[in-house]
Structures are given as structure tokens and as C-alpha cells.
Length: 225
Image (cartoon, rainbow, N blue to C red; front, side, top):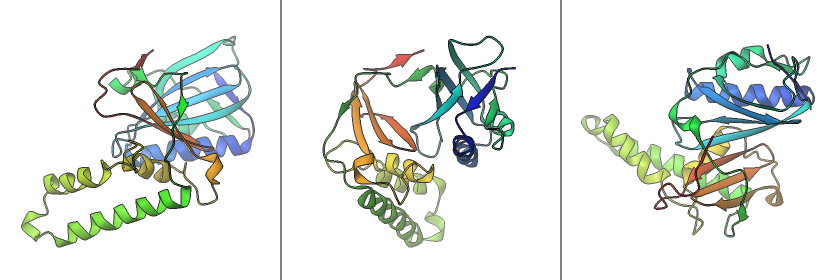
């Protein structure tokens, strides 16, 4: 069994928290792991947000059992979470699973260019708060017979598909960043950035990134690995 030696207890705790949040939205969640050297990237897709979440994890050393070049595997998020030992700062890589379709199509590794127009973190969190309040208000205004799943989904799409200013970044991406613990209250404005590469936008913070396909650009910029 491959054992990951994480940089410290904090990295182990953050990885466990990220996996727990993914499992909150999908009890059967899978994650794709990619690692080289002492850097591990954990990719997940919470279905409620329709975005790709990426958590970077620092490793103390590459691997055991002779795996010393790269790691690329799709595994059960729940099994990976169970294997995390925060005190020892280790995690065992579970057996690979048949990955969901999103796991085969990831954002490009390079070519990311900074984008302008992203509000400060406090403004982003306020934007999410206002969107949540609007959803609740519009839901409560519906008559009982009109409060159907289809109507609630329609309201949700209307609100969360809006973009952040002129950036093209959908508000659901910011909501995902906050819900997954990437957009924390103490985050400084200089530590949050928006980047673009091909058809992808990426909201990056010190705690993780949210990647999303830009509307109207088709399949450009995909990385199939």
C-alpha cells in the first residue's frame, strides 16, 4: 500500500477537512490524486456547485514501496479520509476506483494568466451572502403548490450562474470556494486571484482553488489525462 507522508499535522487536518466537505455534498464522492515530488493535488467535484475543487497538499517525502516518480489515481474520498492519520501526518492511498467522467478531463497545468476585476475577499463573501438571502426570499415567496424541485432549481440557476462583475466567473464558484473552506475570513486580498487558461477560469486562494469552464468556449483548453 502506498503511504503519503504529509508535511505536518496541519496539512493532514486540512486534507481531512476538505474530504469531509466533499462527502457532505456527495457521500459517494471520488477524488483524483496527482503527485510528483513533494506536491500532491487532490481534485474533487461537489455536484451542488458544478465546479472542480482543487486542494494542494505538501508532502514531507514522496512515497513508500518504490513509487518515487509520480502518482495518478482516482480513489474513494471516504476511504481516503478514513486513512488519514492526523497525528502521524500520513494517509494511505486506497485502491483505485472507476472514475466519474469529470476525473478524465482536468484544467491545464500551465498557461494561466492573471485576470483583473476580481473584488476583495470580503466583497466576495458578501456577494455569496446576498445570493443565499435572495434564494431564500424567492423560495419563501412561492405558493406551496409552486415550490417544486424544478422551480427551485430554476431559481438557483438564475442566481448562481450570474457572473462576478465582468470577470466571467460564475457566482457559484465563489459560493463553492466559501463552502469548501477556501475563502476564509482572514484571507488577505493579495492572496486571492483569478486566472485564465484556454476555456478555464481558476479562483485561487492559499487554501485551494476552484476551476470552472467558461461559457461559450466549447472544449478548448481541456487536458485529458
